Length: 424
Image (tube, rainbow, N blue to C red):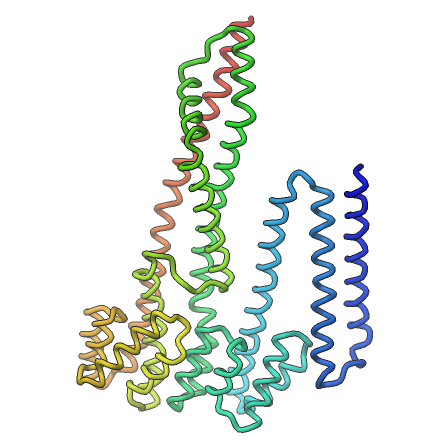
């Protein structure tokens, strides 16, 4: 074995052992750190230990699987991102459910946050203790969430800020805690299917490229050695593959880069790390924003506060910049005399039918109920549409993949059968 690879393997093992030693020392002697500078030192050492272990494992895997190192590196990065982000989101919702429980039992929020911050020593615990300190210092819950934005998921944070600024903090906390059960399972399942489609296409593209570059030249050489003519279906298949090979700059590479980009975007969207929309997606995803806006406005109405106050809060703290801009424009129209329903409709935040329902509900005094029902029905309808689209695309993609596999198998193995028949 190459001495360079041996040295790399030894260095990787050493990095893993050093990282494990640091993590073990932190676990065996947690009392060595005080409550001020010790937290920062503890986090730095924990980060160093985990980085050494992760880097050592990746390098050792590259040494062992030299041929598939690039693919293994990509898979490892994706898995690490998934584990890290899943842990962060789980901790955020754990804190959110703790706040909801504190509201139900009459426990002060700063006490609940302080207890949650003492359970572990990680980055989320630092955010939790920071938020508890701000609340103890007299800051409101909305100001605290604005100063510690990573304490809660963006959607839940927006709902809680709007509800708190409108005097409905308890209802906002309960509503935010329910958002995970309503939204997360459905949309993550749909994005997971999209990731499956993209992975299937990427694997198929890689297999076809390998067959074209490695297998096809061997077939042609074998048939030329025996002076046997290739079957017509194999010739057609070879002509297709040669055309793709001659125009690789405008066929294979664009498809590969586009698939990798879409796959990366889908993975980041699944993990909650990408919240921007691709071109053309705004028309579909804007309905999700409409659901969040209607649900937040329902809290404002239940608190008997002007809807303009809720729209102002949303325009200041909504996670998406494009939606914040639409809300600001809607506020300008409202200040010029337009009704809030017509302004939201004019800027694409509600549909004409929804605006009519809200107008009728406002006249009858059932506006809060109408806002809640429209948010729930829009959420269900949008989920059904996306699920229907995925269900329709799944058979189509499967049929196309099956046709390509069938054509490739017949072209290659059929030629082998023809070769054997001529030799016999």
